[in-house]
Image (tube, rainbow, N blue to C red; front, side, top):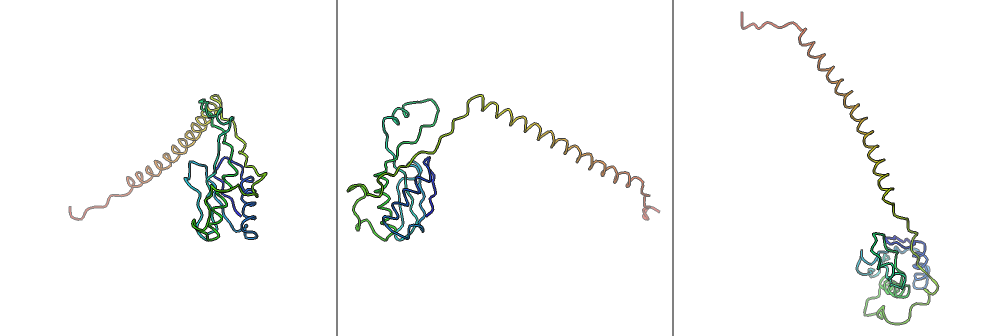
Length: 191
């Protein structure tokens, strides 16, 4: 099984989740699946082809009290990932596995109906560790270093260009002197 993760959640947690679901549904063939996971805004719906072993999943999240507090802040910082709705995600995943096994919608119950699958009990999908955003001083320092690197780079390019120009001027002077030193051929028409 291969998991391609485009979300802010840990790939190892997603892989454990999908592995549990595939083992419960398809058994020994779980290793041959490719699952690509997207956040809610990048893709509208989860999908899988009939009889095809690739699944595209949209990660469903739900807000809790902590998320509401974070979402109310407007300070330019990124919002933490919301809590994954494991039960809904498991129902949708079971639905998409059904498609890979050749089932069509008329052959399945709706993914919203029924209790959550038992295989998802105790699993969690945690957010990746977030890195602190650089401060204004860090950004200024980084820009200053970039400017200094560019000055040095262009100083070296200028020196190289000046050396190259001098070389070609020397070659031009050589041909000019050679042309001046060569004897002039007499034009036979003027005699």
